[in-house]
Length: 102
Length: 160
Image 1 (cartoon, rainbow over the protein chains, first blue to last red):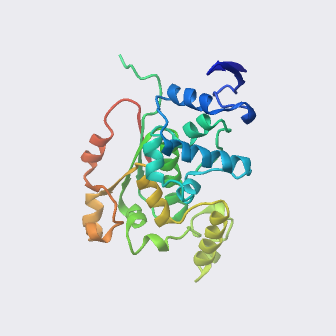
Image 2: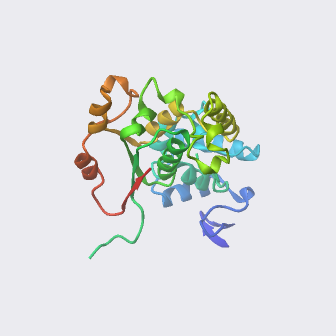
Image 3: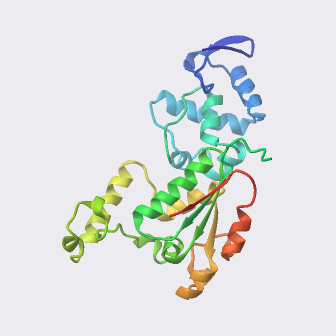
């Protein structure tokens, strides 16, 4: 479905995840973060950039993998994105909802 | 009237067994709750204590006897080495699907904000001390203490 955000129209699925990463930009990231009550800091962006890189490499994400990423540890990941961190960060990063159970 | 709209706010997971399949089920449920933004607390009681016992947690086994889903005759399951072999095979499969070992899983749960409690009665019964347990457990609780931890709307309790 279409939705307007940060002055542009993007396609999202019923849970609000972007369905076309090419439509994503940092202003959209900031706007999606604000909807999740988050103000993005440079630290958040480092993590979001990592998630996007993994997505572009077709590499599935999990909490365990985040912990081993060398970018952020699990504790800080939960501090940066306190509620459902992997899902919330993926949504802000414009990538699909992760299908991982761990 | 309750204001809760059915949302699960907190999972209270009681682990009473130390067979690998039960321990992993409990850990995946606790971690999965946190991944969804749900609070999670675990209570280790009776044999479940072995999952947080420093010297035992690396040596948990799957059950090959009394476990029909193993599709193994009971007598065969009881032979020396069979349980170890089945455990070895299961651990290999788990590593393939990116499942952490028990100690690493505890570290992940802790870093994710899961509270880890051990049962006072079971600790006394097995003569375990706090120093015997995984270093980051949150404390030793009575059943009543654990129930108090679960107060509030949207709390669910699970016994494994």
